[in-house]
Structures are given as C-alpha cells and as structure tokens.
Image (cartoon, rainbow, N blue to C red; front, side, top):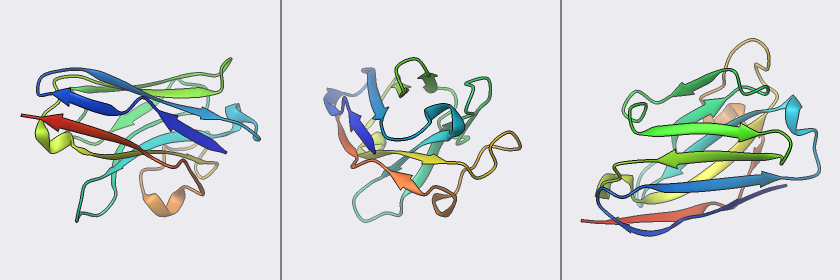
Length: 125
C-alpha cells in the first residue's frame, strides 16, 4: 500500500515536498516513481529512484527543478519541487515496481504495478 501526502496550494515560485509512505512490501526491493496527471491530460512520468537510492532519472523538463529521494529506513519516497509554476498543477502519484530493478529505471506507467491514491498540487500564478 502506498500513501501519498504533502500536496497543497502554493504560489508560483514556491517549493513543496510531497511524500509517499509504503507498507506491506519489502520497500528496498522496489524502484519508486512519481507521476502526475493534470486535468484533461494523460498521466506523465516525473522521476524515478532505484531501490537503493543511488540511481535517479527525471523527465527532461523537470530535472532542473525536482529532486526525488528515498529513506529506506522509513519506507518513504519524496519529491522535492522547486520554482513551481501553474503548469505543475496536477495530481501527483507515487508508484512502485520491481520491473527493471538492478538493471534500469522504469519510466512508463504500465511498468508500475502499485499506485498511491495521489495528492493534489495546485500552483496559483
């Protein structure tokens, strides 16, 4: 089970950190990812982090502003978002997968088999 939290309403230029707590699975066996879905748009990849936290990958448009991290002692993955703008308004989802573990970082929605409920991030301009 994945539980996302930390979303909210912020101003353009602000920072926000969302979190995702995992339970009921061996957290260190999974690659963790963040995705987001804006109204009327498809769900899109944001970032992924390897099971041991040593590898990360970002969508090119977000890699300069977002940072994914994880704390395996707390079974939690984080997404730090800086310099937010209105285009970042979306429901943000965390997800877990064993696809590609120790080989590559999964970036497609179909590669992830467990999803959190999403947390809304709204950026006002």
